[in-house]
Image (cartoon, rainbow over all chains, first blue to last red):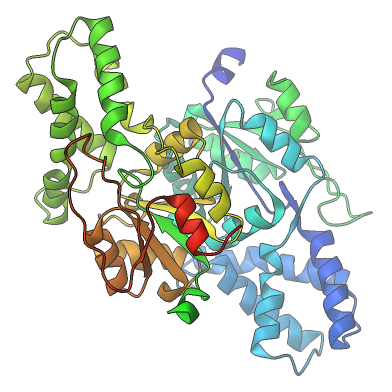
Length: 239
Length: 239
């Protein structure tokens, strides 16, 4: 295992939930947006439902029920339904577009920037997210995430956990799968990357769905497990 | 023109020759490689021929004579021919691979890093190069180039100056072509980007082919023209 680990040259990161705290970012921006637009709803429920719509929407693309479209487009479709459901009316197209782009302005977990700065001293660090390239690029700029490279499902035309996403990411980095380590808060993402030969690190984010909504996650025996990115750097012996 | 310029949100950069000095980097590494491997050749000629082989090789891919392959593969094909031509024998596969990857280790022009740092305070800055993603990512890490995003012909399956490369780059950035400015030392690259609606900045690099081999370049009337990236930042009024 130590030996396998010494072959790692790049770390690829899941982003939503693993690097950034979508829940509290959307709730905070939503409440602010609500105040300025006179909308009084439960933004925590709004955030959770928005996120809950994302898996099924991607699944419809994966099954061929919807043509390929990026996450900005999927988020917008879900948003339009939620505006109906929450009876939010009278928003301009510019308002809706601004609200939809809250996903470009998510805030990093407190350890994320300092941990990534340490990890990038030894490894190539790249996103490997279902988020689209523009979203990930804007988010990096907004949040100060020091990626070496933005890799996205959008470049592959498949969504995670399809194997093509991981395979293409390794190929674009010019590496064999065993030279890449997937870092994620979600075991399903790690399992799918492992199936094509990636090494894996689980970084659980118990607050992903907000306080009091902790979901248990189970590590696979071969996973490195760290409670945050600085602990991951410690485990990889980066000073 | 000022008005059009105020709409720019991202700058995309040609890399070989515009950001990095391939000629002097390859000559310097070649001479060092020659010393350690007992190879006494004219590395300036070697570098110029290597680069000269690149356009025709891409053209063969563009015409469908060769299947799609990335620049690492094209560079390697040209290198193998040059090793024959210069009668360089006895190199191991590891030696050849190391030599081929000199293109991942090119040095930036003296103004490039400081200029990019200034430009990225206002704009998304991205590569838009025929170099492959791994090459551009490794080079950025080696040279300290602070890209927000690595965009490459490899992501499109077309080489510049095919219009698909520029169109796809703007789409991936979530921008309209007129919101993107192409920065290059080569008028042909600028013209092709302009044809799909990009704004353009010419940064001539008279030493691209080494001292005494200056090639004249003519700006188009609509181009911004700057002698280096800091001058470009000045023209864009970035302090």
